[in-house]
Image (cartoon, rainbow, N blue to C red; front, side):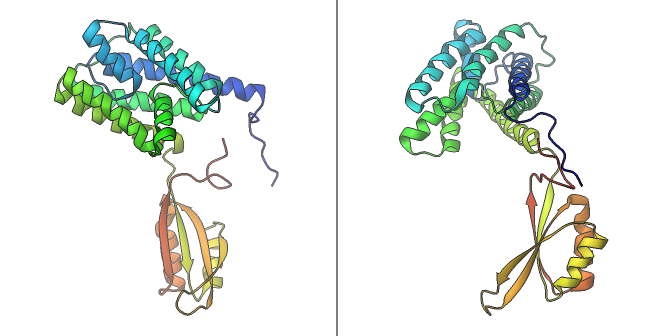
Length: 289
């Protein structure tokens, strides 16, 4: 079968335009969610946008102005301390996201229920960030500050991000109420889960490792009855030292039961390891982006 070429070749001008389009679209989705749900309900889920919510409450300053005032210096500091490896997109994102917040600042507020606002605001921000990440972009802000902390303290990047988000949420508890901070934590949790969904989708699959004395028969059952490809790995028993074939096969969720039934029908004593995998690219599964 002829190999299909990607619709947009990576590195081409069209691909660059596509990635920047995702940056703008994602920023708009994030900004609309911020203005519809989070900011009106005084829910700070972390980041520069959370800081802007707190400052607006204290001073009345437009959140977009606060975000520009923080994003640009953080970007310049990161450029000085980290170098330019994070690229032009971080600079563009640092400017575009606050602009989108300003443009969408007059959108109506659908709900004043803080729980609904935290959930739907978290979904919207996660969706927007996921779109930005799919375009290999960044909206700058405390993400760059976390990279600085990571480099100069040795803390993990994930922990560095959590430090800044945690400080913002704790500050919201002091400025607003502890309840608002709890809603902020809910929003942050929903955001991270939504980003994962946008990045890898709902197409969860299982990878199975099968060890059996009847590997030939199991291989034929998988190839011809299940209609799935497989890879044979060379292994050896840790105790006996005997050479064993290890079959590796990736199946969709709805094929797991059929795979187990096929293996059991051939060899009830087969050793089967099933592990979840979040994304599978290639023939029979998801196409490469």
